[in-house]
Image 1 (cartoon, rainbow, N blue to C red):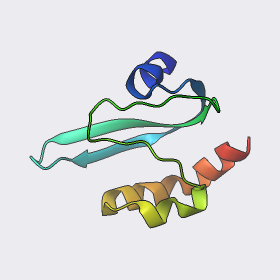
Image 2 (image 1 turned 90 degrees about the horizontal axis):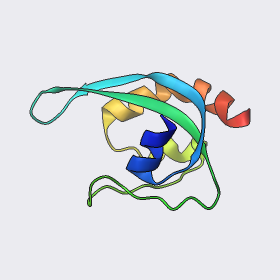
Image 3 (image 1 turned 180 degrees about the vertical axis):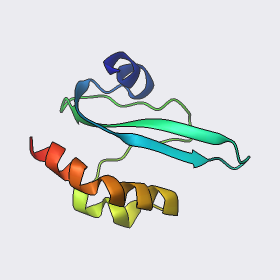
Length: 90
């Protein structure tokens, strides 16, 4: 998992918590499943994205709901908020 994190985002870090699977259907109504993790990144991490149009942003945990635009992501984050908050304190 650490290798994939580094390859796909450029982030070196420690996986603190494995979050529940995030499942949805894309624009073509094809099923998509994403493995989600809470990661503690090194402070000097140089991020990169897999796709040119993607971007990586950092937000305080209590601001995440305000920046999510997709309802399925808002619902998912609300369902894992407590686990993320607890993992962030450890």
